[in-house]
Amino acid sequence: MINAVVTWLSALVMRTIESSGYLGVTVLMVLESANIPIPSEIIMPFSGFLVTRGIFVLWLLIVVGALGNLVGSLLSYYLGVYGGRKFLEKYGRFIFIHKRDIELADKLFARWGSSVVFFSRILPIVRTFISFPAGIARMNIWKFSFYTLAGSLIWSALLAYVGFWAGENWHFLSPYFRKFDWLIVSLVLVGTVWWVTRYVRKIRDNG
Image (cartoon, rainbow, N blue to C red; front, side, top):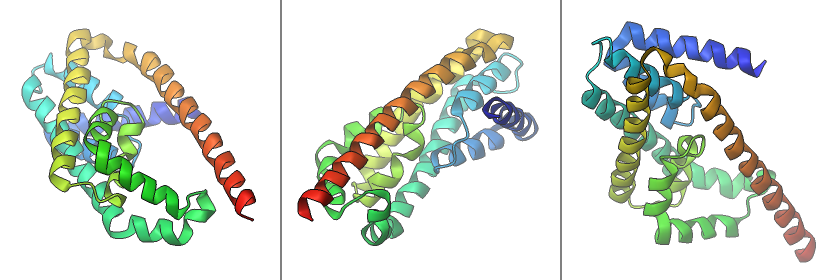
């Protein structure tokens, strides 16, 4: 089932890029950074391969991909700013998030926000969702934008260049990225279990 979804999504991404060029790459990268899990691991390597066909220019492709990420990240960021905090304060308990957890996130982004945003932009899965909590924590918008763009340039350059280097064999990367995705998912699941256990203990101790 999962493989079928990935295959369908891959075909959709490639058709979009082939028919829409730079605009297609931009829109897909915007969506990828706006909490919609469209894999940049397909978008950019395939586009990098198309550089070898003369359809794209490598440096311009990298810039377009990074700017798309920035726009999508800002959409997610402002979603967090203008609705995320109120939502979590009202309904957070249903997903095991306490008001103190929100305050802890505020402190984390106030002190380490630049590093968190930058390094998250070069990690699969995490990169898609980091902007929303940054918005909830009201991280400085200029710092957020700068480090988002910096990390996105590195990520876009890496994927585009690998696609360019691999040529028609660009898709050989998919199994490796998928394994890394599963590693990230496993770490997230472990963290979720720890978080829920911590929350339940806190409620029990206070009750």
